[in-house]
Image 1: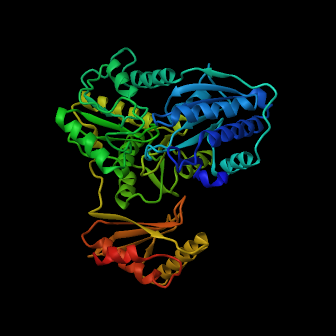
Image 2: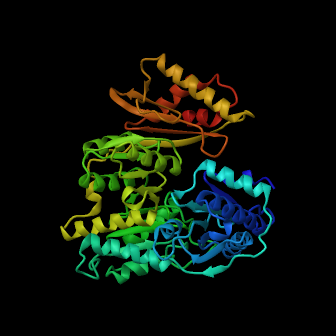
Image 3: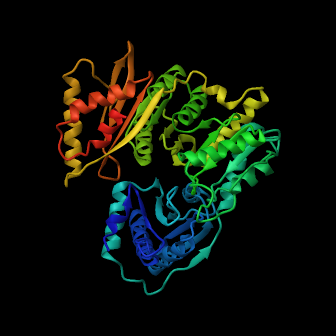
Length: 502
């Protein structure tokens, strides 16, 4: 078994159901044992002295894989805590919470991916593990381990009620500590996508909110209603329709393991991607003028202007939520006040929440602000006034056909950068930290259109994003790129050429 093939960023992921399953109970058992040994090394303890917590989302393969991971952990002599149904963010919160505090934790989830998939997200004392940490764990799995003479124990110890109490206290203290039902008068529709987040609706109701119209709250590991993904068009259309049908103030949607979320406003308008970043940025910048907001590289030009107008600094960084979070942590350690790291996908981590990638915490902050604004006769979406949104946008994926795809992609990026430097009408982004981002003047509008070409975090693919503030700008930018990249070998340019011709 080549465990490295299961690597997906800093997570493990693979098909877990059916004849083509690669993430089998036996594989997960081996990975559980490897993580126990790795955690013991990191903590400077004997493996028999450590404990690992385990949680899962609603996927049908979850119970068996959690059991297998627990068996792998106790085979080393370590203790395994079974938290049952949980959320990914809660699995790290447990490490920080008195009365729990395992040495490490594992969430069994494949996030928004189809129900036949599953995966493992690993947490250590400092948060989610990094790419190189996972390499070490996979190497230990490849090597295998000899079972301890005495197996450890599997102890059932639910953590979700404690995590829920943490969120409830956040809302109460954020609105009015003297009031036990601070959400009275607020109508919120929750869509859990049949994942692990259905409890959030019950929690809001306990705090006084009206939750009529909430949907797909019951866990169902086949996700029969829609993909639990805040970026999915059908999922967002579903929550939007539910909000408009009942006339709610707000709609909230989670992915299966609740590390990502999005909202819709009272009109049903989607607030995800750039809008979501703008909204939370406005809230934080109102409290912390001059703060730096770290995002991934594909955010819009309008968002950069919006953050600047709110008095903040926009810092574009690489795709990959671990990259964004790690850079925000680094900036803070260097003395830069950076309260937020967020990807356009919805992955968001706030400094006030230990830079934990937590979609449920994010929407809780937004919910508090929504209630405060309603008490003032305003709506949450008013904060988005002034956000310039692109007239056109597209994403194209160019397959890298060369055997050494990393070198081919790097050479293409360097070629485009050099081409841009040689042409006055190509404006290379001054904050280019991933791939190559170029803007163009179109119809006498300065920097009206741009493209970003980069190498995928996971696959032999070069994602190409393009946006324009004027009609026709995307084709203008793509045409310019086609001129530059046409002679580069090892890349399938047919999707780019088709986009220009359509």
